[in-house]
Length: 50
Image (tube, rainbow, N blue to C red; front, side, top):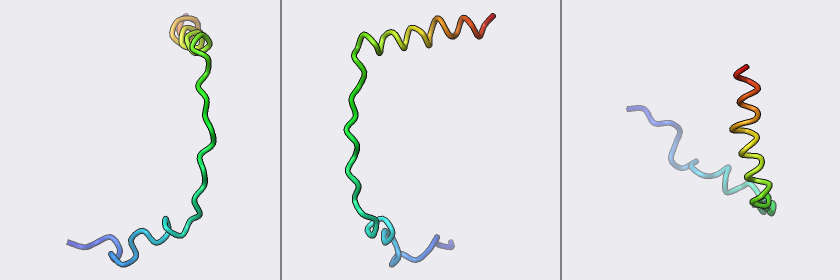
């Protein structure tokens, strides 16, 4: 069975790339999140079904 590239080259690119810190992520306020879910599920879906 043929292999996909040599094992000696495994992980070279990922190790060479600089580490980038993740951006801080904040979830929306629960009240706002629930409103968005309501709009998606009921309001916008009703408009598309007409």
